[in-house]
Image: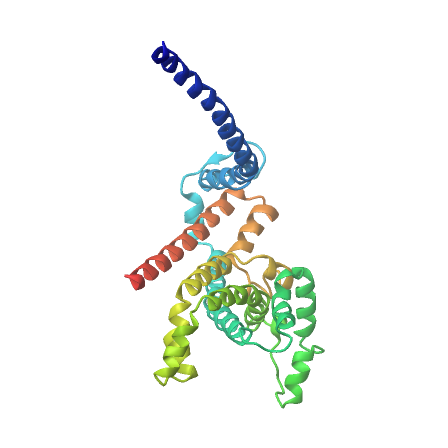
Length: 311
């Protein structure tokens, strides 16, 4: 009698426990999906779908109205013979080649400087980060005033120290890109400074003490301890800077609009002009694919180089 009661009670108890557990699991799963689903839906609708359709429209002629006409590789052949495309590509590489190392050096220098115990440390860190969150339009207006060839404070200072013919900055085809690079570096150095500061906080103090015991000076500690320990942070910053530099758009649009002439025309702005000024979305999509391929290729090379250094 007692054995049969136990045999009946066990499955009844198991079923009674499984039900609430299942409802709890289901509720947690629904809550989790409720948090992440809006992000996935937004990403799919605003990023994934446009990127996928981009690869189709690159092989068509489409002006945003009516049906796209398939043209094969005609857009890419046209791109090969397009002087403006090569100018934009060269300017993009020019900006990237100077903007990345300059921003790396300045942001790392700021991080090293503000990683010490000095009076007003929080203020200086905030001041360095402030340009990154400032309106890009306000930045363009202020810097265009500073760069004014005739009345700008920068050229007035250069004349005061004896330079009779200072640069024309944004009014000069020669100096417009260096001016944009300077402003781009100034704007982004605070953000990357924070990343380097976070990396510096993780360097064990014992390594510096061991280096000092071995007789290493400050410079040797920097090359022997700081830089090697910052390599993961430097790699991340370099990848982010590379992608950001290749797709630079808003800063140039509000500062120079690609001019004078085409001296600051970059690929992102060229895509914007072709797509939204000339309604040539097929050709703009083809140029976008080239920019996408360049970003992917450079990023993969950086990952492979970093993996080789780790081995």
